[in-house]
Image 1 (cartoon, rainbow, N blue to C red):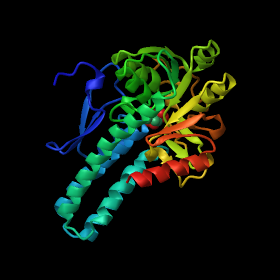
Image 2 (cartoon, rainbow, N blue to C red):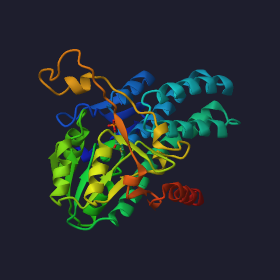
Image 3 (cartoon, rainbow, N blue to C red):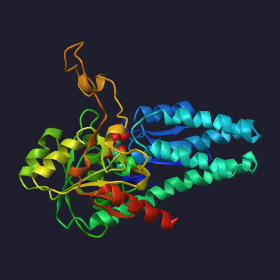
Image 4 (cartoon, rainbow, N blue to C red):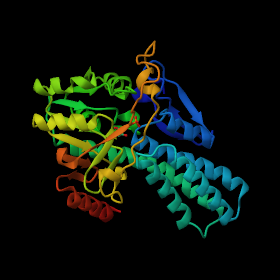
Length: 362
Ligand code: MRU
């Protein structure tokens, strides 16, 4: 199939014939669409760490495919379960260390480990087959989950609405639809049109490089703004709702997402604009009680001082604080849109209900 836009490429996929994890190198977008075929565990770790593949759901899918590929290699030399499992666990821990905040990474890896343990009585070759099936399912599930988030999210907005989003929680952060963009894409399929404002998202510009790009390529009306302009567009009355993604939702509804999300939520509250977090249940971590317990990734100072500039834009030696994520307190969040419906405050109860629904649907 000839590929016309970025929407025709897979963000993250498994190539069985090549035994490779296939990703779009997101550090190169929007200027060039470079496809990477990764076969080595270290390459896959680097791709996650360097944000070549990024966004919580995409990281989870990449990790599932990555650990399957490694298990296949281990299985070729270890036919006894104990030796296989020991090496599998080491590889799993290694991949899990690539980034700390998005819970999807450990969620997907734990799910893969459960497959190993549940099939302990089978041969290693059969276990590897089961891991293949699970990795494929995790990827397919992401499409269904994001679609369902889109359907639920669409009930919160109407044709013509202005929507603001932060970072990239789009197709490029998942397999298809994205999370925060899912209501927009599902709405588009149904003939709705929206006016979307994309925060550029300092310092790594996921909003400018990725969200503005994929929405524009999809024919959606998108306006790029600097992060410090969101108050202006909200005060102007141009925004009816805010949709953002998340990297980890705590049991009390506090949400870790890209740095700057909490500023958007605070300003939205000032202007009574509903602030929705789109969260697959894979991103909800009931084992983390509140946002205070979420580990926030700290990244290199150069991302703030020189990256994207022709010349360094800050004095040599200046101290830099560069957290990749922040925590939005639950009282700023109007609703958390999951594949099982919309959780509303108080989140301690509503998130439990969402998981009860998930259990029932198993
Ligand atoms: O550092 P990134 O680009 O991986 O951060 C991504 C985000 O913060 C997204 O909003 C989040 O992962 C949700 S993606 C559906």
